[in-house]
Amino acid sequence: MRNFYVAVAAVAVLSLTGCGSEPAPAKEGKGRSVLGPLTAEARQAAGQRGVIYVPAHSSVSWGFDRVESEMAITLYIRNVNEKQGIVVHSARYFNSEGKLVRNYVEQPGMLGPMATAGYVVAREDTSGGRGASFLVEWSGAEDGEAPMAEAVMLGQNGNLGISFTTVGRPLGAKAAR
View 1 (cartoon, rainbow, N blue to C red):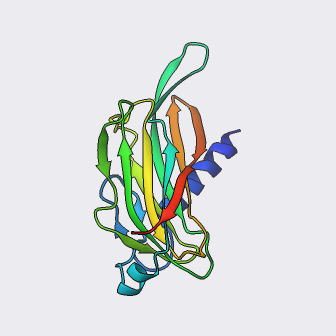
View 2 (view 1 turned 120 degrees about the vertical axis):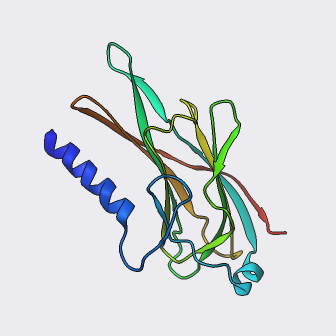
């Protein structure tokens, strides 16, 4: 079982460090973003626009004693298109009361084909509460695929670890303005 937790930690570290050219640092936490500058071509190619809701949890209760554990959250935005980039307009993080905590994307940027952007909410940051969530706004070519968004939560209590994922749900694609 210990090997399982070592493997999970190794995957998390590799996911956060990435590979290839040096990405720009994320606004908060230790995550990295691979969003590139927005080109005029990308602005004109946007034929669809969408929002993805991603549930997240900055703390959970578990076990017989209902132990409260703080969780680190990593939001991943994945462009699943092999040929076309998409524009990520925002990655807004909300708390349990529905109030905006922060936006991880300060200005729209390009996410290349098959690329993934990741943003981390540190384990010590409990501002989201148990019912935290993200809204990811994106746009892309009319015939392109919608991106995928997910949250990975990791926490520990003593020598026990907990990890789980949530998958985002599209709130609907609409024609770009």
